[in-house]
Length: 523
Image (cartoon, rainbow, N blue to C red; front, side, top):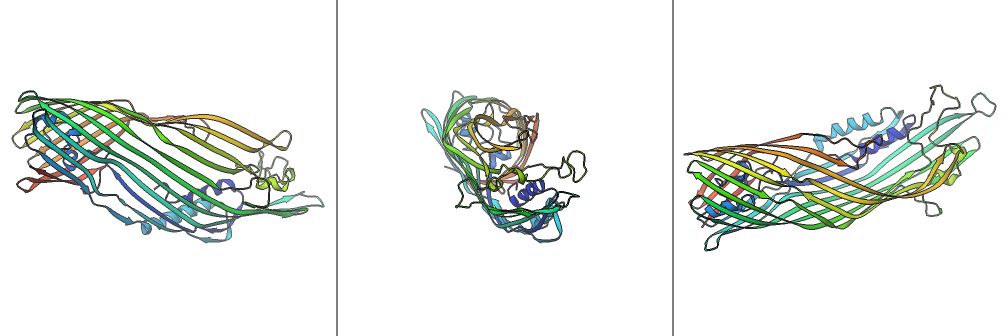
């Protein structure tokens, strides 16, 4: 939702840039956003495991348990195959967002619009939905002398977004009275028409393949081990083409300069570009023991190793800004009195050659150093069973962090104003930057209760934010949030379709794929 109105972001920027000027024309253009999402990262592998809180308890007889608790395989006496599916669908949310977008535009430009502004609101089409269909396949084979084995493929996370924005246009005008009270008094006027075209896309996906082994040592104790191979892909792109020109006239001033003018030798583009393409495999393992203390009490312990790897690929970002533009100028200066010497202007035209008005500064980010970290944990589950009633308490003690750790080189060059000399000087610098963003899990508490074919569960995730290297609008380090709490709930049921076929469904599950359903066949 953050990108669905890039238009509003641009309008807010213009509101900052031209806070004392007038927007005489505003055409919001046409925008189309398609967003498809699937996430089971926090919600378990199948509908059945989700209904029981995604716990490691061996009371949950499900072939996907080879991922959560491979020791549970040792107690299975039937081979199984299961598939997990969620419907794919899409909603057109345009009508729900129209009024909000129009209100946001009004709010963004209310201090800058001229009394007779020509204002055309954006035409928005937003399609958002679930990327569903097949999301998990699990197979468990029993009866081997070496123990039972299982294989599972599933996708914990998938995001696909593309955005198209075109025909966005602004005309901003600024008038300044020069030589106030003198015979040469005149009005200097600056007109800045802009047109913007945007094209953005992102794909973020994770797929996992797991193979596990479990063997019962006796009728009460079973051990197991598993190996996970995870494929992570991160792709993102943005092309922003900004066209327009600056005209300034009045008195002896008559300047016309354009962006993207091929006839000039200086850099005069405002276009921005983003290219991100990373992928690699992450490998981890887990080890487990299950102890059926008595027919009424189960105890399960699972160690999941953390994962980390450096992703293969590169990051390339180019941004352009107007060096001659004072971002936060004050029209009335420090004393608030118009027409005095401390008044500031959007452009100090008298100090510039015509070419410097449209000369743009450039910032380039380059990187091939992106590391992903996924935490491990020690998971304990105690289960109480009494006829048709089941109760599970599970505690997970995490170690490690869920984060992206990346380094990049920032190249900057352009012109900056020397305030003392009233001139613009060329500059160029290179800085090595290091960022780490994500969360550090502290504790996961899970409770689940089942009665006959119904189950209810809740999970509480407690974590701290990681924001190393990030800075706020004032240039100060971002203070990460502490003790973030994310609660989840699930209510579901399961029943036999045939003698050997079981169907489980999440009736309510937040956060979770919508109407997630699993089918398990015993053979």
